[in-house]
Each structure stands twice: as structure tokens, then as C-alpha cells.
Length: 359
Ligand SMILES: [Zn+2]
Image 1 (tube, rainbow, N blue to C red):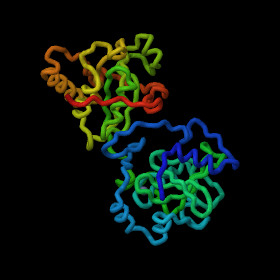
Image 2 (cartoon, rainbow, N blue to C red):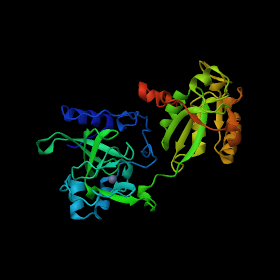
Image 3 (cartoon, protein in one colour):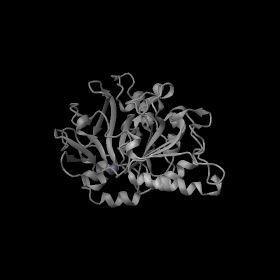
Image 4 (cartoon, rainbow, N blue to C red):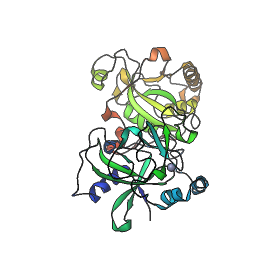
């Protein structure tokens, strides 16, 4: 029985499996310290670096597998292991990215490759923590942590925490047969490229809740809490709360326009906050809690203004005026991400906001 486990669980497994051996001390930029994220329950699955990592169907994997050599198929599909010092990528020192041989997903960058002396290509961190998945492996009388491609589940190798000379202390031990190399400067095929994204920005009260709700929308890749619409450069949360910086607590939404449109995001925004409250939202009072849309371009500004006008004409708002500001790209100014402890606040602290149903 092969069960893919979460990164944090896998790391606990690595630690448990190798307890008593050399222990690394991961730094702040370790993949071990990656924060949890809220993800939409429906729609495609995206990685932090905006790749579509929706698990491939068995039929699609079988189709892709037709292009493998018998040796590659043995490693990738049947958890085979190359003999040490035999793989073609062991001594590759070129700059570029190592992608999944089967599905093309970028798995490791040349920047994290190091010479472990073991005879297998070794890396200290994945290209993106969402691109590699982990499986407890008790074969051959050993307890190890197998690594697989998060998109196609092709076998890659194993991960160990016996590399204290590296930034993370981890050694991702790879089979060359599981990888293809794309040298820097050459064009990557579509399967190895991120999706084309669009960005929108909304302010609707405390950003923790607004961010959490947008993270649940199918087609949303990431939502980031921050500040926009003010005149102070690089504002801190404290400045925005206690000094007059003019900023609103805002959420920058990165999305896949092929899955969700800007108009759909606008409709969602007006469902999850009260646009008739001036300079407040529920118990949170102050201009930083104002309702605002910071348009990324002239088309968004036009679409947002028209949307508000239409919404104002609906019976729901017959007696109440919508006070949402629609701010054009010039006036909106820069978006500044908030401090790390504000990001994914609900995912980190448990619980998630309920999305109100359509009325
Ligand atoms: Zn793959």
C-alpha cells in the first residue's frame, strides 16, 4: 500500500527513520519551515510557483509511459534504483532545471545540486515544496522515505537528512532516469512551464479573513495579505494601525484566468464582506478596514466600476449605498505584503472562514 503523505509528515518520518545518525539543523530558508496553505476543494491544484500539479489520471500516466525506455520504466514505474555512479546526470554541472522524465514538472534546480559522494545526483531542496511528494518505504528491510513526483507519482528516489553541509541538511537522492534536464536559456516545453496568471487586489476589512476566503476559490493560486492605497513606503502593520499611512488592509489574489474570471472574483468579493460599511468592517473600525478594489489595469477598473453600478441597482442594495472605492492603477500605488505572521493566518491557527451561500 503506497500512501502519499504531507511534507511535514514526511520530514517527521525522515527524522524518525534516521534518529541517532547525523542530524542537520535547518535554517530559516529550509523547506522544513514552509507554512501550511488553504487550498480550494475544487478545480485544478496549483503549486506555490504557479504550476498545475493536479494529479494525473492513470490513463494519462499510461499514455506518457509509452515514451519511456525499459530501464526508465523500471525506475519510474516500479521503484527501481540505478547503480551508483552510472546515471547520466550525476556529473552535470550546467545551470538549469531538472524536470520529471514522465510528466515534465520541474523538480529540482541546479542551484540546489551538490556532490554528496554517494554516486547518485543529489539536491538539498526541491524546486517547489509542492512538486515533490513523500511515501513511507519499508521495502528491502529498511525504513526509508521515498520521493515521487507530486503530479504523476513517478518514482524519483529517496530523501535523507544526512547532509549537514547543505542549507537544509537534506539529501534528495535521485535516479538520473527519473529526470530530464533543461539547460538555462533553452525554451521549456508547455508541461514544464508555469501557467499564465493574472492578479487582482481587494480590501474588505481584516485581511486574515479576506485572504482565507479567496484561497478557497477554484482557480485561485495564491492570496497574500498586505497593504495598498497609502502613501508610506514599506509600511508595517503597526504603522498602518497607529499612524496615518492611508493604506487599507488588502489581499492580492493571483489566479488562473482560464478557470476563474475577474468578474467572478468581484462577485465573490461582494459576497464575503459588507460593501455598505464606511471605513469599517464589523468590529474593525478605521480607514485601513475600508472596502476598496485596487485595479491592476484600466480594464479591471472599468469592470469593477460597472460591477458596482449594477450591484447598486439590485434589490439587496435598494436602501443601502455601496461605499466601495474603485481605485485605478495609478492611484492604487504599490502593494506591500504584510509581515509573515499575517500570511495564511487561519491555516496556521486552525479554522477557516465560512463562505456565505448565494442569496
Ligand atoms: Zn511527474
